[in-house]
Length: 87
Image (cartoon, rainbow, N blue to C red; front, side, top):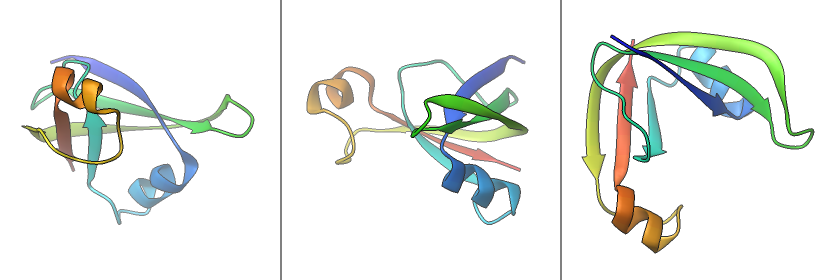
């Protein structure tokens, strides 16, 4: 088991905190697997600083997809995607 730390924007952070969102879609440019702890630190994109809030979630599922429209094609081709589910 590993702890994987990533930034998360305030809207997504709050939805996870409220229990509304139980997954993350991320560029698959890092290693994460079932059983790992996903440490999400809230990041304010306007101030470019962490807010101090964080949440830990146990990873229950990881899948790699190969098509979407949010990232550059060369990054998608190189890394694919990770769909990360947690409880």
